[in-house]
Length: 185
Image 1 (tube, rainbow, N blue to C red):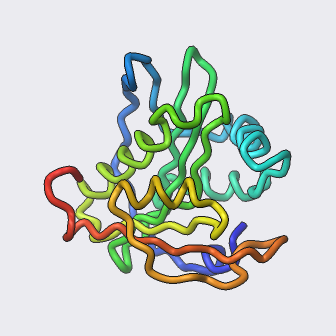
Image 2: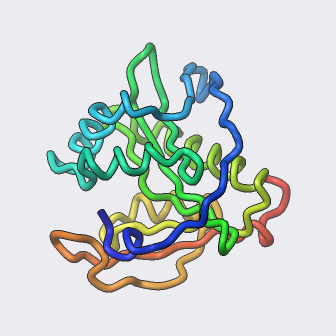
């Protein structure tokens, strides 16, 4: 798990229900629903596929996150009953922020708009809750992710030195300010 995020405190709050739905991207139908504890093994396998065989989050990390649906929103994308992507977010009521904790799309489905759809779904959820910001971190080396986030309106706010456990790579911290958005969130 990431150093700074692990230490953050979150005030109790009950997130509104997320309604499962079908979404279409480029003519292909997907199911979008809230993740459950039963999905954890698949989420870890997706991370292993994305991160060269090493899942950044362990079973206990996902157990902790998914056991707190009142302050966490984890979504999965299914194609023909198979989970192919997920994203997670933590609600921080004390500062009016929804923080993206992680996002992963299996490699064969990357660059098909699924990551964008996941982020936009969380953006819509946060905006409907009257959040002021969305925040996230990306590895400094992950320029593809940073490009996607900028396309969605995120701006770089700082570099967090040695942020990631293991290799201590720096993180690029980014923020989407809903007050600066016009109509699309």
